Amino acid sequence: MIREKLKEEVDCRRNFAIISHPDAGKTTLTEKLLLYGGAIQQAGAVKARGEQRRVTSDWMELEKQRGISITSTVLQFIYSGNTINLLDTPGHQDFSEDTYRTLAAADNAVMLEDAAKGLEPQTRKLFEVCRLRQIPIFTFINKMDRPGRDPLELLDEIESELGLTPWPVNWPIGSGEEFRGLIDRRSKKVTLFERTERGRQAKEHCLSVEDPDLYNIVQPDLIDKALEELALLEEAGAELDMELLHSGDLTPVFFGSAMINFGIRSFLDAFLDLAQKPVGRISTEGIIDPLHTNFSGFIFKLQANMDPRHRDRVAFMRVCSGIFERNMLVHHARTGKSLRLARPQKLFGQDREVVESAYPGDIIGLNNPGMFAIGDTVYSGLKKIEYDGIPCFSPEIFSYLRNPNPSAFKNFRKGITELQEEGAVQLLYEIDLSKRDPILAAVGQLQLEVVQYRLEYEYGVQTHLEPLSFTVARWVTGGWDTLEALGRIFNCKIVRDAWNRPVLLFKNQWNLNQLMEDHPKLGLTSIAPAV
Ligand code: GDP
Image (tube, rainbow, N blue to C red; front, side):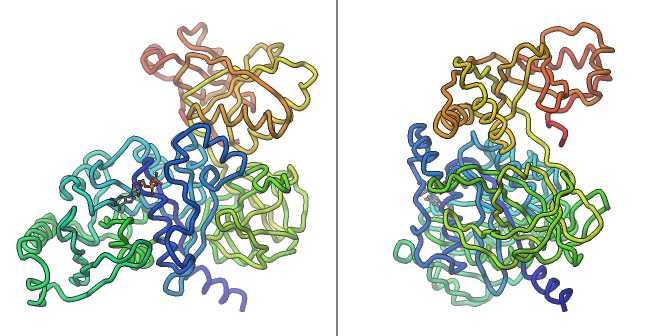
């Protein structure tokens, strides 16, 4: 019985995260997916986060309110009888570390591009993370209602720059003002769109590509052009190879406009069909099948003080196997303790409700009185398992964090430790143990400011930053012994991370290259090994 129920729930679950560069339309697309999923009645209901968040002071204001723009939460909706979990990631690039961790919990990624811009820096960076994890990537080319680049050129760019084979699932008829519809490559069906009142689903009219009526409804030159381009694609001959898709080597490509709701349904339908169901994950006991009846999950994100009224801390857990039930007794792998999870929560943006049960691929929020750390495994059953840790990503900005007030030392220590556990920032230390002020290491400047702000408002400690002029960090894979064997090295600063592992800081890439030339056998990695 349990096995059947579990299989049924796993079969109808899909989870994904969106990767994109700011402004590509992630907020808009998220909202429209929810609109088509029936989770909201009218677009515009998800808190507008548009322009505000580009201004630092507003970010701080949002930080105060713990708005959903900054933190990744999960949005769950039902579409065509399937449960879709959209792992929301913060849009601002300074929070991309958070996005990396969210990707660790996702089974699929949607790469969102602006049709006029193509690949942009943050998309490329996040793509690398997906590649590392070999997760299937779906490409949505957005803003087709505006003048954009040639679709074939956009495909070429994906192929040549990311080494990913693009496989268009649909093809646009016209673009910009003349964007009229999409041809589905597999079914040979044409969907024509009509704009509707803002916030409502677009009117759709379906017909066969061979229907002579098509030429009466749409300008013939637009159809001919689309068909010619499709013929070119067919000639190129790539197949929709599911294995390549699931290993992250082929990307199904969709065209549309999130703003005017064109192509949202086509995307969702094909996504359900092609996306990976919750997959097994690597653990100390090998790959754990989601259908294994023992419950297991791992923590991929911590967030303190999400609700300003309660000053709580929430740990986000991805369910990996079995059925999770409220009040069940589980084990915490790292400490060996047993605990009962009495108030697991489902989060929808800022709202939450207590969940009774959850299945593989779902994300739930757990109250975290300091027990959980990122990467922790929680499981039921007798046999201990631990999932592979989640790596930290290479910081690019470094700054001493000074606490000028010795009497606040305890709070300072508590604050930075908790913020580090939460993954808000990475901490590095001087080798000289008498120098206790940490070096904050972050991906973006705003991350540092948020740490300062939170230290002040949540822990009552005023601090100041003293920037360091390094831009590159590398972990030494062989540890201290390897480093000592090298003897004296130049143009880099040696520090240690919170786990006492050696880290080298360089002013620029050139200095790093120099060191690698001098010591070709030295193992360096830009991604901190998981703890
Ligand atoms: P995010 O930064 O990726 O979350 O992007 P937003 O969803 O906030 O969108 C950025 C801007 O692009 C906003 O002004 C949107 O209205 C606009 N936008 C989003 N999708 C589309 C689209 O399909 N067409 C057009 N013309 N504008 C869009």
